[in-house]
Length: 261
Image 1 (cartoon, rainbow, N blue to C red):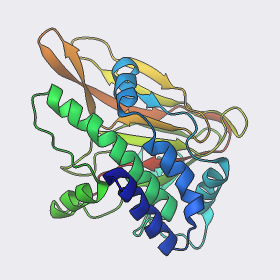
Image 2: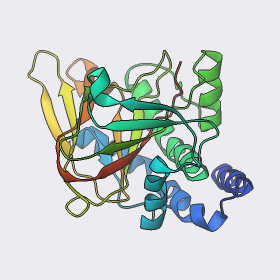
Image 3: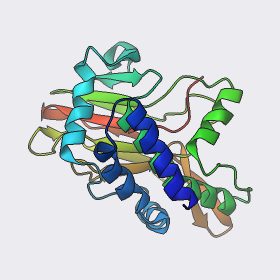
Protein backbone atom coordinates (compact mmCIF):
# COMPACT_ATOMS: atom_id res chain seq x y z
CA UNK A 1 0.00 0.00 0.00
CA UNK A 2 1.54 3.32 -1.08
CA UNK A 3 1.66 6.43 1.18
CA UNK A 4 -1.31 8.14 -0.49
CA UNK A 5 -3.42 4.96 -0.45
CA UNK A 6 -2.60 4.33 3.21
CA UNK A 7 -3.40 7.93 4.12
CA UNK A 8 -6.78 7.62 2.41
CA UNK A 9 -7.50 4.37 4.24
CA UNK A 10 -6.59 5.99 7.55
CA UNK A 11 -8.94 8.90 6.87
CA UNK A 12 -11.84 6.68 5.87
CA UNK A 13 -11.31 4.35 8.81
CA UNK A 14 -11.34 7.27 11.22
CA UNK A 15 -14.51 8.60 9.64
CA UNK A 16 -16.20 5.22 9.92
CA UNK A 17 -15.23 5.17 13.58
CA UNK A 18 -17.21 8.39 14.03
CA UNK A 19 -20.34 6.79 12.62
CA UNK A 20 -19.94 7.75 8.94
CA UNK A 21 -19.91 5.01 6.28
CA UNK A 22 -16.84 4.74 4.10
CA UNK A 23 -18.98 4.80 0.96
CA UNK A 24 -20.19 8.31 1.85
CA UNK A 25 -16.63 9.62 1.83
CA UNK A 26 -14.58 7.48 -0.52
CA UNK A 27 -15.86 9.02 -3.77
CA UNK A 28 -15.03 12.59 -2.77
CA UNK A 29 -11.67 11.68 -1.27
CA UNK A 30 -10.69 9.67 -4.34
CA UNK A 31 -11.78 12.48 -6.68
CA UNK A 32 -9.58 14.95 -4.82
CA UNK A 33 -6.61 12.58 -4.72
CA UNK A 34 -6.91 12.11 -8.50
CA UNK A 35 -6.46 15.84 -9.13
CA UNK A 36 -3.08 16.57 -10.72
CA UNK A 37 -0.90 18.87 -8.63
CA UNK A 38 0.58 20.32 -11.80
CA UNK A 39 -2.85 21.35 -13.01
CA UNK A 40 -3.53 23.24 -9.79
CA UNK A 41 -0.19 25.03 -9.96
CA UNK A 42 -0.65 25.88 -13.65
CA UNK A 43 -4.17 27.21 -13.05
CA UNK A 44 -3.16 29.49 -10.19
CA UNK A 45 -0.14 30.76 -12.14
CA UNK A 46 -2.38 31.57 -15.11
CA UNK A 47 -5.54 32.86 -13.44
CA UNK A 48 -4.63 33.62 -9.83
CA UNK A 49 -6.92 30.80 -8.64
CA UNK A 50 -7.89 27.22 -9.49
CA UNK A 51 -11.42 25.79 -9.69
CA UNK A 52 -12.13 22.08 -9.73
CA UNK A 53 -14.95 20.31 -11.51
CA UNK A 54 -17.65 19.11 -9.08
CA UNK A 55 -15.78 16.79 -6.71
CA UNK A 56 -18.34 16.26 -3.94
CA UNK A 57 -21.71 14.67 -4.61
CA UNK A 58 -24.83 16.83 -4.27
CA UNK A 59 -26.20 14.78 -1.36
CA UNK A 60 -23.03 15.32 0.68
CA UNK A 61 -23.12 19.06 -0.08
CA UNK A 62 -26.72 19.20 1.15
CA UNK A 63 -25.76 17.35 4.33
CA UNK A 64 -22.91 19.78 4.95
CA UNK A 65 -25.18 22.79 4.38
CA UNK A 66 -27.78 21.38 6.76
CA UNK A 67 -25.21 21.20 9.56
CA UNK A 68 -25.53 24.98 9.87
CA UNK A 69 -28.86 24.72 11.71
CA UNK A 70 -28.34 21.28 13.22
CA UNK A 71 -28.75 21.05 16.98
CA UNK A 72 -26.43 18.04 16.99
CA UNK A 73 -23.47 19.88 15.48
CA UNK A 74 -21.20 21.80 17.82
CA UNK A 75 -19.64 25.06 16.67
CA UNK A 76 -17.00 26.93 18.64
CA UNK A 77 -18.05 30.38 17.46
CA UNK A 78 -20.78 32.16 15.49
CA UNK A 79 -19.88 35.44 13.81
CA UNK A 80 -22.42 38.08 12.80
CA UNK A 81 -20.52 39.83 10.03
CA UNK A 82 -22.32 43.18 10.29
CA UNK A 83 -21.48 43.43 13.99
CA UNK A 84 -17.75 43.40 13.28
CA UNK A 85 -17.83 45.38 10.04
CA UNK A 86 -16.92 42.30 7.99
CA UNK A 87 -19.91 42.65 5.67
CA UNK A 88 -23.38 41.17 6.09
CA UNK A 89 -24.27 37.54 6.75
CA UNK A 90 -23.12 34.95 9.25
CA UNK A 91 -20.61 32.16 9.63
CA UNK A 92 -19.82 29.45 12.15
CA UNK A 93 -16.50 27.81 13.02
CA UNK A 94 -16.62 24.08 13.66
CA UNK A 95 -15.41 22.84 17.01
CA UNK A 96 -13.16 19.81 17.42
CA UNK A 97 -13.55 17.04 16.48
CA UNK A 98 -14.56 18.13 13.00
CA UNK A 99 -17.40 16.33 11.19
CA UNK A 100 -16.10 13.31 9.31
CA UNK A 101 -16.70 14.77 5.84
CA UNK A 102 -15.03 18.08 6.74
CA UNK A 103 -12.02 16.30 8.23
CA UNK A 104 -11.63 14.05 5.19
CA UNK A 105 -11.95 16.88 2.68
CA UNK A 106 -9.51 19.02 4.64
CA UNK A 107 -6.86 16.31 4.82
CA UNK A 108 -7.15 15.05 1.26
CA UNK A 109 -7.16 18.53 -0.29
CA UNK A 110 -4.19 19.60 1.83
CA UNK A 111 -2.13 16.71 0.43
CA UNK A 112 -2.72 18.00 -3.12
CA UNK A 113 -1.90 21.59 -2.15
CA UNK A 114 1.24 21.03 -0.05
CA UNK A 115 3.40 20.40 -3.17
CA UNK A 116 2.02 23.60 -4.70
CA UNK A 117 2.90 25.56 -1.56
CA UNK A 118 6.41 24.08 -1.54
CA UNK A 119 6.83 24.96 -5.22
CA UNK A 120 6.00 28.55 -4.28
CA UNK A 121 8.59 28.42 -1.49
CA UNK A 122 11.22 27.21 -3.96
CA UNK A 123 10.46 30.09 -6.32
CA UNK A 124 11.12 32.49 -3.45
CA UNK A 125 14.44 30.85 -2.63
CA UNK A 126 13.18 29.02 0.46
CA UNK A 127 13.43 25.39 1.43
CA UNK A 128 10.30 23.24 1.38
CA UNK A 129 8.49 24.24 4.56
CA UNK A 130 5.11 22.51 4.32
CA UNK A 131 4.82 18.87 5.44
CA UNK A 132 3.14 16.29 3.16
CA UNK A 133 0.41 15.33 5.67
CA UNK A 134 -2.09 17.60 7.35
CA UNK A 135 -1.62 16.12 10.83
CA UNK A 136 2.00 17.31 10.68
CA UNK A 137 0.86 20.86 9.90
CA UNK A 138 -1.60 20.69 12.80
CA UNK A 139 1.27 19.67 15.09
CA UNK A 140 3.27 22.69 13.96
CA UNK A 141 0.28 24.94 14.63
CA UNK A 142 -0.22 23.41 18.07
CA UNK A 143 3.43 24.01 18.97
CA UNK A 144 2.92 27.69 18.02
CA UNK A 145 -0.20 27.98 20.18
CA UNK A 146 -2.65 27.73 17.26
CA UNK A 147 -5.12 25.18 18.61
CA UNK A 148 -8.58 26.27 17.42
CA UNK A 149 -9.96 24.64 14.23
CA UNK A 150 -10.63 27.03 11.37
CA UNK A 151 -12.97 25.18 8.94
CA UNK A 152 -16.27 27.05 8.81
CA UNK A 153 -19.70 27.22 7.23
CA UNK A 154 -20.78 30.56 5.76
CA UNK A 155 -24.37 31.58 5.03
CA UNK A 156 -25.51 34.54 2.92
CA UNK A 157 -29.08 35.74 2.29
CA UNK A 158 -30.42 38.56 0.10
CA UNK A 159 -28.21 41.64 0.34
CA UNK A 160 -25.45 39.87 2.26
CA UNK A 161 -21.80 40.20 1.24
CA UNK A 162 -18.29 39.66 2.54
CA UNK A 163 -15.71 42.45 2.58
CA UNK A 164 -12.25 41.83 1.13
CA UNK A 165 -10.06 40.10 3.70
CA UNK A 166 -7.37 37.49 4.41
CA UNK A 167 -7.73 34.41 6.63
CA UNK A 168 -4.44 34.37 8.57
CA UNK A 169 -5.28 33.47 12.22
CA UNK A 170 -1.70 33.27 13.47
CA UNK A 171 2.01 33.26 12.70
CA UNK A 172 1.71 29.98 10.80
CA UNK A 173 -0.59 30.34 7.81
CA UNK A 174 -0.62 27.83 4.98
CA UNK A 175 -0.63 29.87 1.73
CA UNK A 176 -3.70 28.28 0.08
CA UNK A 177 -7.29 27.60 1.09
CA UNK A 178 -10.32 25.87 -0.39
CA UNK A 179 -13.94 26.96 -0.77
CA UNK A 180 -16.65 24.36 -1.49
CA UNK A 181 -19.90 25.79 -2.90
CA UNK A 182 -22.86 23.98 -1.32
CA UNK A 183 -25.73 25.66 -3.23
CA UNK A 184 -26.53 26.05 -6.95
CA UNK A 185 -25.71 29.44 -8.53
CA UNK A 186 -28.57 30.70 -10.68
CA UNK A 187 -30.97 28.26 -9.04
CA UNK A 188 -30.65 28.53 -5.26
CA UNK A 189 -29.18 32.05 -5.33
CA UNK A 190 -28.25 34.94 -7.61
CA UNK A 191 -25.25 37.19 -7.20
CA UNK A 192 -22.83 36.35 -4.43
CA UNK A 193 -19.81 35.92 -6.70
CA UNK A 194 -16.48 34.95 -5.17
CA UNK A 195 -14.11 37.89 -5.66
CA UNK A 196 -10.31 38.15 -5.65
CA UNK A 197 -8.31 41.37 -5.70
CA UNK A 198 -4.57 41.33 -6.37
CA UNK A 199 -2.56 44.31 -5.12
CA UNK A 200 0.29 44.67 -7.59
CA UNK A 201 3.41 46.73 -6.87
CA UNK A 202 3.40 50.11 -8.62
CA UNK A 203 0.22 49.16 -10.51
CA UNK A 204 -3.47 49.44 -9.93
CA UNK A 205 -5.17 46.50 -8.23
CA UNK A 206 -6.63 43.71 -10.33
CA UNK A 207 -10.12 42.37 -9.52
CA UNK A 208 -11.36 38.93 -10.59
CA UNK A 209 -14.58 36.95 -10.34
CA UNK A 210 -13.98 33.27 -9.59
CA UNK A 211 -16.50 31.11 -11.53
CA UNK A 212 -17.34 28.26 -9.17
CA UNK A 213 -20.02 25.63 -9.75
CA UNK A 214 -22.17 23.70 -7.30
CA UNK A 215 -20.13 20.99 -5.48
CA UNK A 216 -16.86 22.35 -6.91
CA UNK A 217 -13.89 23.64 -4.92
CA UNK A 218 -12.10 26.92 -5.54
CA UNK A 219 -8.48 27.15 -4.39
CA UNK A 220 -7.24 30.67 -3.71
CA UNK A 221 -4.21 32.27 -2.06
CA UNK A 222 -4.57 33.09 1.62
CA UNK A 223 -2.30 36.13 1.69
CA UNK A 224 -0.07 36.32 -1.41
CA UNK A 225 1.25 34.39 -4.36
CA UNK A 226 4.58 34.52 -6.22
CA UNK A 227 4.63 35.95 -9.74
CA UNK A 228 7.70 35.74 -11.94
CA UNK A 229 9.17 39.13 -12.79
CA UNK A 230 12.27 40.45 -14.53
CA UNK A 231 14.29 40.20 -11.31
CA UNK A 232 12.84 36.93 -10.09
CA UNK A 233 9.74 36.02 -8.13
CA UNK A 234 7.72 38.84 -6.61
CA UNK A 235 4.93 38.38 -4.08
CA UNK A 236 1.52 39.80 -4.94
CA UNK A 237 -0.86 40.46 -2.05
CA UNK A 238 -4.32 38.92 -2.48
CA UNK A 239 -7.62 39.50 -0.67
CA UNK A 240 -10.94 37.80 -1.27
CA UNK A 241 -14.60 38.50 -0.59
CA UNK A 242 -18.15 37.87 -1.81
CA UNK A 243 -20.29 40.30 -3.84
CA UNK A 244 -23.83 41.15 -2.60
CA UNK A 245 -26.38 38.38 -2.96
CA UNK A 246 -29.32 39.48 -5.12
CA UNK A 247 -31.59 36.71 -3.91
CA UNK A 248 -31.81 33.21 -2.46
CA UNK A 249 -29.46 31.40 -0.07
CA UNK A 250 -25.73 30.81 -0.60
CA UNK A 251 -23.76 28.51 1.68
CA UNK A 252 -20.13 27.48 1.48
CA UNK A 253 -17.66 25.34 3.37
CA UNK A 254 -14.38 27.13 4.01
CA UNK A 255 -11.36 24.80 4.23
CA UNK A 256 -8.53 26.64 5.93
CA UNK A 257 -5.63 24.36 6.74
CA UNK A 258 -3.82 26.14 9.57
CA UNK A 259 -5.49 26.39 12.97
CA UNK A 260 -6.10 29.62 14.86
CA UNK A 261 -4.33 31.13 17.85
